[in-house]
Image (cartoon, rainbow, N blue to C red; front, side, top):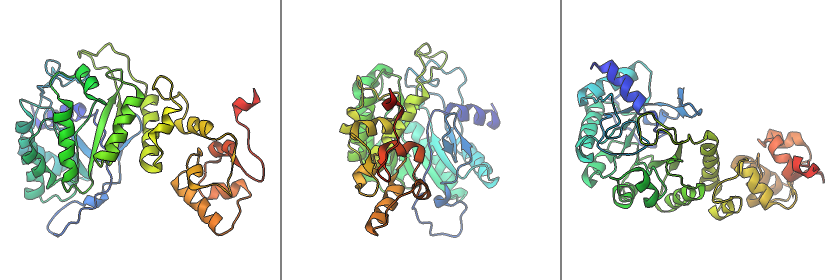
Length: 374
């Protein structure tokens, strides 16, 4: 198998990993290098659900000894095995980089025989990229479940961001889709190690949504715990898609709308610091409503519209169409005793009028919602 065939196979095998990058604060102290760690916020390609990706996202190997039931690379499922050699991998990445096809690297892998041996090959490849080819740009290194502390520590020394996937929200759910991973030891313990390491852009994780019939509340409880206890930078959600010739090939696909609603709640937990308990109130059987969660939260929170000129931060941030930036601008106007009297004023400071108007009072009036006409 030639290198081009490997790139095609292993790039396709990596498509399920979400890896949207953020700029790294790592300082580069040498002029004898290529690549810029801070520039990786610029993205050039998109996943099928519209997520922007800027990195060369690829598996080092797709030959796996693990038995995850949803995965095309799982033991006994993969009919097209491929793996790189360290020098081969490094050459392909640098070739793509100097041609301006990619700006950084996301390296992951299946677990061939054991996590440590596979990680040693991945580290060797990245060391060549860093030292031989002097690339000092952005690298996201995927930690394999069960990898030893020393190897993870070594990888942290050249990585801008690291991650290990939760896959499921708890031990019970993980046991439904994999018989070889120990949730607390192989995954959570590794996350705790990453928390203590000096990784410029921190760590992230990903969950497969719908592979084990978990509820939205189970997922959000776990991700909320991770933000509070693991110093997680961001959680990612991947809607389950059945893959032919896997044990879950006949299971229903998870709608992308469910994935999107989890991202909505995640943003409000992470950026708005709204308590998870508030979202429990809009759930039914531990599942989020089919409508926009922020609209459901606002309907549940506000008995009537709020006066835009007298509202607090906590009130403003719960109004659909008002985000942290526009809420701050409204409060600044209040501080300077400048009243908002026209829709155009709201629009000029970034408020999405169509979403916000049913929940705010402007000049003593509020726009009715559709369900109020019944």
